[in-house]
Length: 366
Ligand code: DNO
Image (cartoon, rainbow, N blue to C red; front, side, top):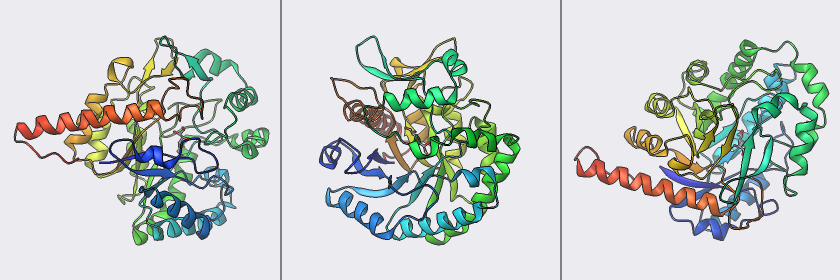
């Protein structure tokens, strides 16, 4: 397992690389180019600059999150071929720069979705919150406005204002696009990029839908074990794999996360692990919490045990954290709580490895 930390770049992250370098166990950052319009080829010089910046801080750049997918690809429009060709070229360039995994999502219009970016928790910290009732009563436009107004001045990943300015048009385009269409459009895309991935040794890792159910009547397909199996079956190459996000998939209580990790990880199809906790409420609301198992609904010990049991060698990152100790920053992406999350994950990993070694069953791999 290789521990990483998401970083939004020199201009758009208030956390400097030297601080990330000092978090125990972190070997690399998960980066991206945020100023290249979705669908365009990533410029070689910009990739090289990002790589140099990260490496000169003593860190690796082996994971990109995300190379976003143009809506025309998700919609299956004839113009998709141009965007897919661009994507293939971006993959070649990233692979030549040493990137090994690309995380992406296939959610129509919206990326992750919350109703509140700073809900206060009993200990005075705050975190991202999903209010199920409010999610049904708000219009997409109201959601966009409320998210933009509360992001502490940062553009949130997946919530780029240019794209969301055309909401009405996008919703009209998705009329009549159902789950089967989305699967077919994903297959078309994956079949086109996987040969490049195989040739250049770079893996695709699709991120689950967050939350893992339909919003505003839009289809969503990366939601549960059956759908993950269906999407992996679209192309048998192990270069076509998953980002297993416990926080996203865990919002649905029927998702058995350790079982999914054992099944898909055991098949070599999990390339990237997002590890975090959430607390579900009986009315369908959920809040993000610290990574600690007893603070939320997800048993992180069982999650890490499953990764350990399958001998997970992929990349992991803590996912969102709370805002604690008065930190002001990008919602979900402060330094302190994510660093605490890493230390907790490292502790679980070491303890699981030690107990396994003592039983004589296997060796520690961290
Ligand atoms: C939010 C993230 C997502 C994720 C994308 C992957 O904080 O978890 O924006 O990066 O869905 O493409």
